Image (tube, helix red, strand yellow):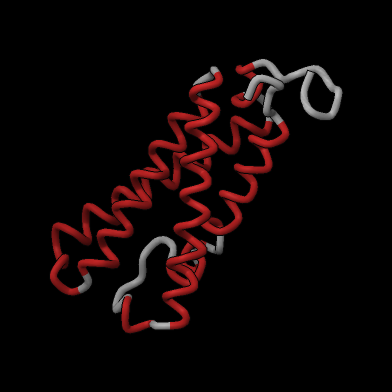
Length: 141
């Protein structure tokens, strides 16, 4: 039973139904951010090292979130919450700093302007991810 008196979700339910779509979107963002970071770091890192390093960090977070969301078990659940939570903190922090002090980021990151370059999906995705994880928490989590 979960905290609402409903039967606890089995570990595999995170990757079923809408969870598969969530994992697929994380996978797409993992690929996109990794490709963007690799290109930026390889070709113009000296122009905006902080911005490009943050894009690489975002890529790592997206890759880890994709993997952890697709796995079952309490440990993977907790790692998913940590990864998606870190993503939300990152997008809120970088998004705010990129608006308040644009000089910090002479080039956009995935999370700049709360992900405006990606249709604000980087802002919406962790909120949906945390909501999905919350809905599928177990009594033992």
